[in-house]
Length: 279
Image (tube, rainbow, N blue to C red; front, side, top):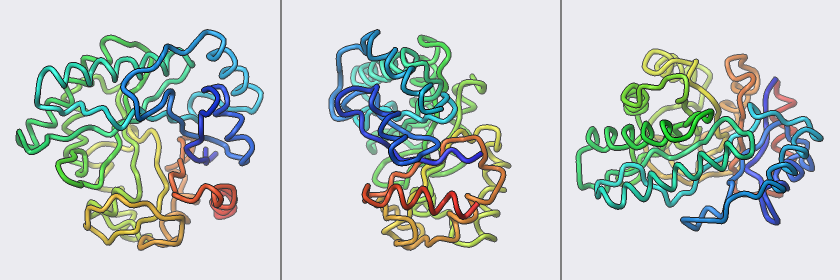
């Protein structure tokens, strides 16, 4: 089964996320567990956590269908040790919040070296940060998201993702989420069935398909290898619909969250239906 859905709002409380997803007939969804523009937030109350779990049960969502995302403020590759310690503390809190909700994955952007250290050193700092956080919080898998390679962002090459997972050294609790827009912007041509298969053959060789824990399905406003992280509605960008038809029909992408982060939420229900009908 394909777990297809958007990144839904938690306005009014995290317990509303599964309700908002169900309204769109989604079979999976993503969410923040707090306001992503703030460093800290009150802990999730026991009441909210129970309501979240009850709403998930009511609408048929299990943890493997849900891919929460951490705050964009967190930079686990921060070269400054004091600032990096604060980032790790915030990441630990994000993992704890997932665990409180009974969720088993946390999607995150690896981090940036800020042009203060080399890319390899930045990857090492990120891996060290992730390992520290996972050792503090059990049960939740840290899911690295590939990036477009804008600025000093790391994780835009499969080799970097593979290296960071290896350096974390906890393979059973690490994974990858591939964002189609980010991959295209980083130079991975997913636009045809042939080039798509070539990219995922490389992913399997360098990282392994067993590490693929989710995908973000976004068209792109930028060109191939342009390093522009600008999402477009499905079929309305430079990627086109062939990649999404391929994902919808390919059994390698069963039973993982396939998350829409497309910019026009008025199209989400139609995009979900389109992807489902392509299967």
